[in-house]
Length: 245
Image 1 (cartoon, rainbow, N blue to C red):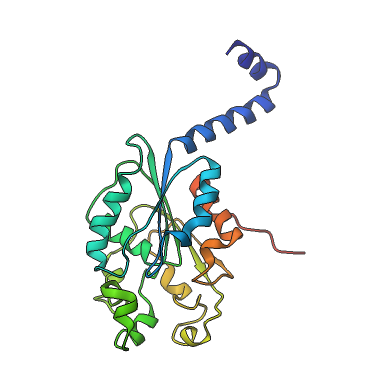
Image 2: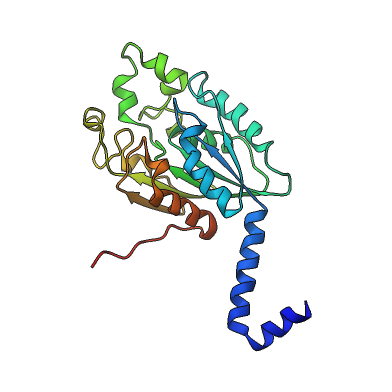
């Protein structure tokens, strides 16, 4: 301690930097991040984000839930508490969600409070539903693939996303503007990521919103998206890259 104080006295700039790094490490060491995948996906789809956050020092819970087996309400009431049980009691709790995972979290927070809730990053959340669900939900095989929750993600006022209200928590949203699905993208307002429009991702009360040229299906594995997730969890905003010369 005495040596540290001497460093602080005679090398103030360097010591302040060291102290800042030590404090940031302590914050991360006391933080737990819960990852929630999207509809008809699994925890493997969030593996790149898990690896990067664990490398940063976070306790990560990459939770696998049966997204096609139950309604959004039932999934929220079972998934979130179970995922929370894997986080140490004294840790601050963050969430990173993809697609419907964000709707599960919104549903849960509309009914419950989470102690020590930190920051939330939502990737391509259908916060106002998706026109794809509107147009395909009556097609044969739709429920077999997407389950009961798939029917609840439309754009009408009665859909679950549109009944949940504004965010009352610190959330940053990443929207995709690139698609390789030329059929589904024609069902959506432009720009879109092939399943959700950029407009639908926006949410009243959000802290930040950024649009990136990535697809709905693969954005979770994109290095630049992963970087933005890390940045928001640490800083509370996304990093705006300077334009190329």
